[in-house]
Amino acid sequence: MKTVTLSTLQAYKQAGETFSCLTAYDASFAHAASQAGIDVLLVGDSLGMVLQGHNSTLPVTIDDILYHTRCAARGKGHSLLMVDLPFMSNATTERLLEDAAAVMRAGAELVKLEGEAWMADGIRELTRRGVPVCAHLGLTPQTVHQLGGYKVQGRDAAQAERIINDAKILVEAGASVILLECVPASLGKAVTEALDVPVIGIGAGPDTDGQILVMHDVLGVTHGRTPRFVKNFMVDADSIQSAFQRYHEAVKTRAFPAQEHCF
Image (cartoon, rainbow, N blue to C red; front, side):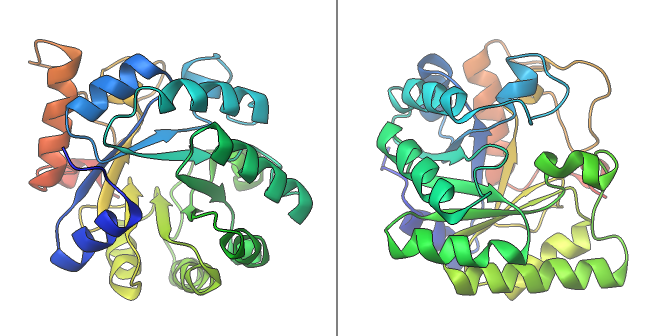
C-alpha cells in the first residue's frame, strides 16, 4: 500500500473519493487497521474514556498522548498518523508550540486541535514552523461542560453560519484539514463544499471527504449509550481485521454513514 500523506487526502478530495479514519492507541491495533486499508489513524484523547475509564477527555495529559503516539507510530504502516493535543495545550502559544513539537517528535504527522476561530493565531504559528494542523469544530469534547453535554451543534442557522465561517478562518490561518463532529448532515455538506481542504466527519453526514470513528465503537466495545453515528462492524465479522476492513470498505463506497447515523 502507498504511504498516505496530506497530499493523498487532498487528491482524494479533488477526485471526489472518500477516505477512512480510525482511532488507534497502540502498535498492534495500529498495524491491524493499517493492514485493513485505513487511510488515517488518530491517537485521540478519547483514550481517556475508552482506555482509562474517565467520563470525559479532560484528564488526559500530554504524557499520556506521547506514550500512545510512540506506540501507535511503531505500527502505523502506510497510514497517516494524526494526534490530538490534550485539554489546555492551546492555553498559550508557547505551550501549544512545545506540545506540538513533542507529539511530532513522538511520531505524529498531523496534529489536531479543538476550538473555534480564536485558534487562528496558534494555527498560524504552528504552520509557520512546519507543523500540519487539523482543526476540530462542531462538538468539541474538551469543552463538554461549557456545551452542557454531548449535544449536536449547528442546528440553528446562526450557529451553522458561525461554524462555516470559523472553518474558513482556520483554513486561511493554515489548517490543512477540518474535522467536524456531531453536526447536521446539511452542515457537514456545506462546510465540505465551502473549503478546498479535506473535511473529516464523525456524526456529520455522508458528504464529508472522510469519515472517522473510535476503534472501540467499530468493534462494539461500548459502555452506556451508543451515539447515533456509531456502527458496530464486528457484527457478522469473523475477526477484528475483518471488522476494520468492512468499515474501510463501507466508507470508501459511501455505504457508511447511512441515514440512521445522521442528524
